Length: 124
Image (cartoon, rainbow, N blue to C red; front, side):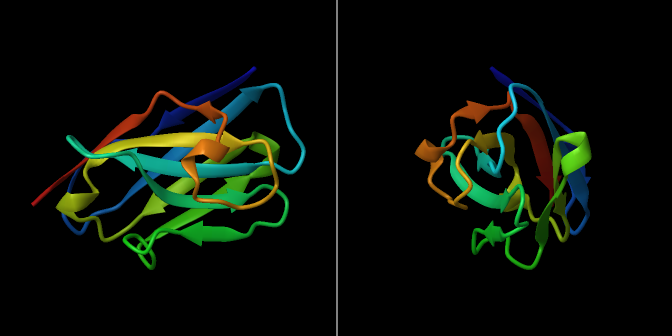
């Protein structure tokens, strides 16, 4: 099994920044993809960003492109989401997820393992 633990959420004013972290433990895969998703109250969960573990290829949702940056530290089995210029519409529970396959994707069904989520609240 794989365990994913997110941290770094909180309350921030519009225009501010936060950095989320997600540490993976347990069974390891070679060449897997990590992703961030979010779910706002009353809305469906949506893709935010993803990164391949070996190649470092990145893919972003249009809504966060230019403001969010996904990165990873392989030795620490950790993926990060740096969020800048935050907006009230970024308020959501943010989830880290792992896809055992190396192909980068935004498709939620491709991700087999999920963290418990961390709350991000952006005040106006």
